[in-house]
Image (cartoon, rainbow, N blue to C red; front, side, top):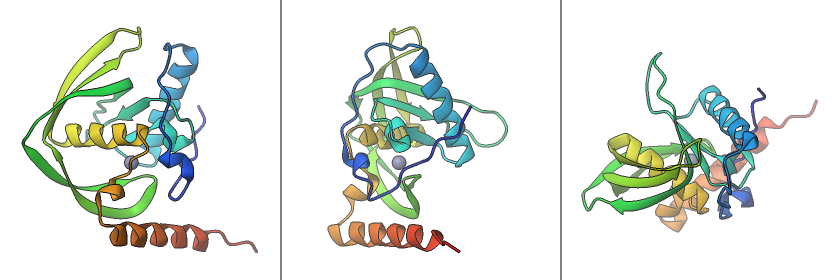
Length: 172
Ligand code: ZN
């Protein structure tokens, strides 16, 4: 299966609202497989479809470390409950390479989503998984972790990423 190209800031597609999936068909299953392969290869612990240029509400996650993979995928995920208690992680993003910032989010959340048989499922997540799910669902709504920072800090990060991208493109 082909690896997909991950888009980076300031690509305007990252600001778009992803569309819900009508029905999980073969095309969506192939998309999910491509997303897992692209995420593991990056490497990252989460990826939203929009990050490979497909603005559909599909997210893949694997926060496991080491050999034993624990893949999660969510189609049309929707947060139905958030805890008042919060936690803070230093977040990064495959679409904002090499940039990190501490982001505070609800420590736990409950998420509704579709499984491969188009059945509604629910998961309660806490800790790193909860943060990761919230970060990925933000992508579906055109929100990046840098949107939680001050405008100055956010612009600095975008500038850094843009500059790095430019310096990589050498034509000889
Ligand atoms: Zn991200």
